[in-house]
Length: 410
Ligand SMILES: Cc1ncc(COP(=O)(O)O)c(C=O)c1O
Image 1: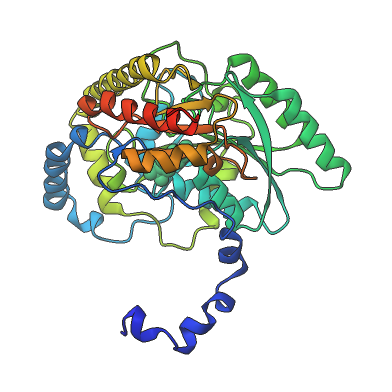
Image 2: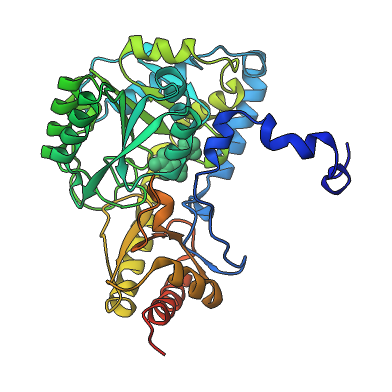
């Protein structure tokens, strides 16, 4: 293979832009990640805490699987995935929610990102309308765009999606002859907003979507990482399993490198997802390692540790923000998850903040990444999940300096 430099001038390099699919061309609209220096304090990516990764427990589980189950673990495993792990997903979902579910209501995928991809490839095509929250997870925007679907953004506030605006957007599209097909929502410990949708809003949302036949995709990537507040029933539970697909993941409760997650919901929808996959299924090896790790009894105590760690980091970041950033912004106070969402004081633009933050060496994700239409210049997202606890104060001090400079202070 030639190097990129040698390929320059080759017919492939010269014609790549025309060769790629329209979906890849559509992705060019996705905002780019900002460039911060590599030694910046890392408040950017929503990566799990590296010190909590359960490497020893996973090493033991891997050895057990290779010793006792290698014939199945190292063979093709089928599309829906390892039935014992699907049984566990059902039990985990039913811990505090009574729902009539079996392993047939579950499909295992390569992370919830893949789950969402699977849902979108099954239900969205060119020109279809998908509803998302504003702001929302940029990975969802990319996935929906890759289906050449139209994205309609619904405003949110501290209590989640604004339901009258949801109904209005649906009715408006219906009047134009294009009924929205699905709504993608993150009701619990939202990425990026850190908020939790109020129960009343969840009930209203379900009622609106039921009436207008809009499929709800409930992304619950962070739901198990609670360090405050009271639980609110999930959309899947409140719907009694009708019209909702819930995405879950092992990325945040065990390790993102496993690339394993699930979709749980009505059986006919799960069957549709399975029929739409052409990837020969997820890794039976990884799925069995996860099952063996869970079997060892390690998961619950591990999740407790993570909730404590993330709770401490979040509290440290909130306290530092209170100390240093109050003149320049306000922010959310999450009960779980990885993120705090800042709203900048009028007159401060996040692009200026990013420029100065790069000089001050503190990284974050600017608001426009989380909006389909590039809005969000008065917002930024801070992740407290990855950064070391003892770096948070210094990082927020640097952010305060960047905010002051963006506000025109000397
Ligand atoms: C809201 C949300 N959904 C899905 C994902 C994808 O996670 P994974 O594919 O690792 O399960 C992420 C990752 O950060 C996320 O924040």
